[in-house]
Amino acid sequence: MGQGEEVKVRSHPETHIQERGEIFFFYRPKVNKEEAHSPNEVQRLYIVLRPESGDRSVEVTQAPDSGKGHIEASGSSDQNAGDDNKSDGTDENKSTRGGHGVQEVNIEKEPLFRLIVMGKKSLPDPHRKSTPYWGFVELVTTKIDDVKAALGGEEYDTSTRGHRQIYPARALGEGVYRILKHKSGRKTHTHLIYRLEFPSEGKENEPQEALNIEREASFLIQIKNPDQHGRGSSSGFRGIQSKRKATFPAHLEGQFGNNRYSAADPPDFLNYEGCEFLLISASDDIEEELGLELKTDSSCSDLVKTFGESVATTPLFKGTWG
Image (tube, rainbow, N blue to C red; front, side, top):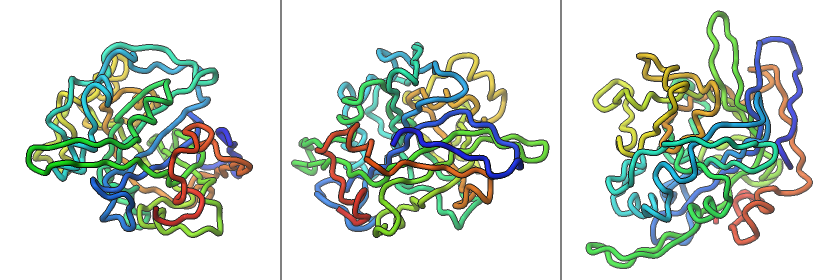
């Protein structure tokens, strides 16, 4: 499939593509449930972004030996969330604040993966365009095995609930995405837009519809200032523990000033574990809103090629729960 292509169908509004790539959606059933058959049985909704080109071929990310040390060193966030009934990733037992140190990754020559957790276990409701949905970057890596491990299953024992089992995440959607700047009057903001390739059109889409994963969508994306605390404020978002928040390099941190949020400009903000953001539904018709048409190639599934045939794909190809 690759990153697809975008076609400008009219000159207005003014937009500028900052990043192109592939987008994959996964969901995980709740602890001790082998399958999910409704949103109430979903423990996590994940988004995996794989940037492949953009304004710059080389992106700056946190160093691989920095940050939270990832799931193998600190324990699964799903394990903690499953026992504490938390859906926002605010686990107390996580390791140190992410994002220390940097490395450069040429996204046109080597893979880069961002594993994202959505706090409400769904994408924003397209019919509630003023309601922000919170999420955070759980993992940034150039190794697909790290992502596979984070999405895999595990078993563990607790002193209060006995033996517990977390089943692997299910593939839910596959498509192409863009991060772009959109100029509206005197204001410029950033969008995350995507279009699905799988499930194919005409298939059932029960889990996709239940989790607000439309065939295409546009969201305003705003990056949260890690030094501005949200507890007790009008934002209504609890956020993750301070020790898990991203540590941005000076050139990114300086963009916040005294503001609580910044546009995702550049998209490098998302290359730091612990980066928190808000998605706000803008449209489910990209061409109407932004004058762009996203095109995909449905000849094969890059998700299966990337993650292997071991990943459960019933929701991806049949559009049914599994």
